[in-house]
Each structure stands twice: as C-alpha cells, then as structure tokens.
Length: 316
Image 1 (spheres, one colour):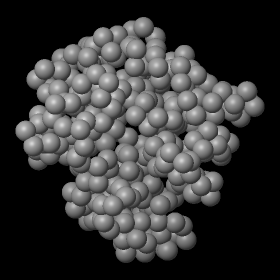
Image 2 (image 1 turned 90 degrees about the vertical axis):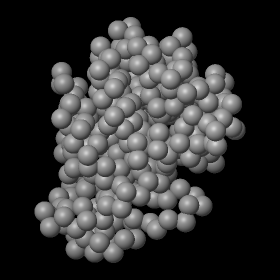
Image 3 (image 1 turned 90 degrees about the horizontal axis):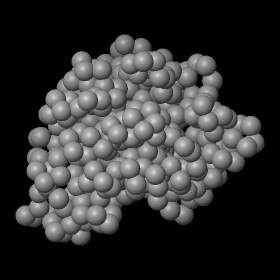
C-alpha cells in the first residue's frame, strides 16, 4: 500500500492499514477477482469472516497475488472472525484452523469474536430461540480464554471483538490476560458511538468501523447517507465523491474503515480517501448528523422468549 496510507498502531508497534477491504460480497460476485483487483490497486488490509462463505476465494486471490509478485504475505493485514456457533472453547481453534486453510495462510494478523452471542453448534443462522445459547451459559470470558490460546500458539498475532458495547468490553477486560486489541463496530455519521469510541481510546483498544458508508441493508428502506445534503455539499466543495468524504471522516476520527465494493473504480476511489483532509467546520457538520441510527441491529438474534434482545445486545 502506498506510504501515504494511514495506519493504526497497536501497542508493541504492529501497524494495521486504516483503509481495508470489506469482503462480505454478494454470492454472485467473483470474490477472488475482487480481491486480486484490490491488492493490485494497493489494498493491504483484508477484512474476512467465516460467515461470509468466501474465505476460499479470498485465499485463492492471496496465493495468486503473492505468486505474481503483487504483494508479500508480510505486507498484508488479514482479519477474520469467529462465528457464533463456535464459541465453546473446544470449538475455537478448529474454527480458526478452517479459516487458515481456506485463506491459505499460516497465521492471521487479527481474529475477532464476531458477535457477543452464541448459537448451538452447527447452527449458522438461528431459526428460533432454541438455536441460541445465553451468555450466562456460554460467557464471552470462556470464549476469550480460547482466543488467548491462539495467540500463545502463534496462530494469531492479535485478538479482538466485534459488535461489543462498552459494558461488555469492560467486563471482558476484567478477566482477560490478553486485552482485546480492537473492537469492530458499525460506525458512520448517522451512528457515531462517541461514548464507545472514547471508552476504547481510554483503554488502548483500537476501533474499526464497518458499514462506514452507512449504506442501508436491502429492504430496510432507510435514507442513504451517501445522498445526505451535508455529505454531498462537502463532496462538491472538494470535487470528490460522497464515499470519499465519509471515509475521510472515519479516518479523521482515528478509526480504521473497511468499505465494501466490487467495482474497480470505486475500490480506487475508496482508497483515495487517504488523500482527503476535511476542515474543522466540515467535521462539525458531519458530527451534527448523528441519529443513533443502527443499520445492523442483530435482529437475526432476536426472538420472543429468546436470550437476546435489542436492549441486551446494545445496552440501550
């Protein structure tokens, strides 16, 4: 990745490129081709997850790009995530090893607990409360102990969490031998999560923002942040895209951003956000957009009579 691209720096000096490629692509897309294109453009941070079902394609692209001399493994930052049906301590290492085989690498740079919620083993998406395990029965601290063992085995450089609130993170920090290095959460101007961001900063936990463009999930019927007048007017003033403004805002807030795209032009445009500096007045206008509007609310976990609800997931 070009030297101008910013990085987040972990204690100890590990450097993670602050612009990454979100890899939750539509199933009809050739994921290997997208990743090869991204790596050729200069992306060096790949955000993956077993849930996405495409780690094999990504691994093929990584292998091909290394063989072609486009990139070396030590230049890549590869993140993946533990899915909810593998929270039992005895299932954590086998889940990681599956991701390593699919990605065709011998270690990950970062491994995250994808959600603070547990499914029954083998249940990818729950169909009812019977498929869920309460955190009282499968506490995050127990899963975390198995994650720590992955670092000690040299299979993972850093471990962290995703979709975790400040109270849950505080509880985990009390029990962790290795503190979470990073929390990956939904974050964009409509959902700024200022208190959580400050909590993480105060405790040395880095933050990656997913859905940094605020694009609505299909069928949600929510307004697009990319068309917000404040965003488009700032973009017009700089002669850049609305997406570039949103990503530059996320970088200026001190977070990493992992936008998704499958188009070469948009991939290049997103990467160019590193070159855009927003003025203080523009940052203020974007700060005023906060609505607390969550696009990814964990609704797939919420069933009447089940152990998870909006209030339990988000402490709201």
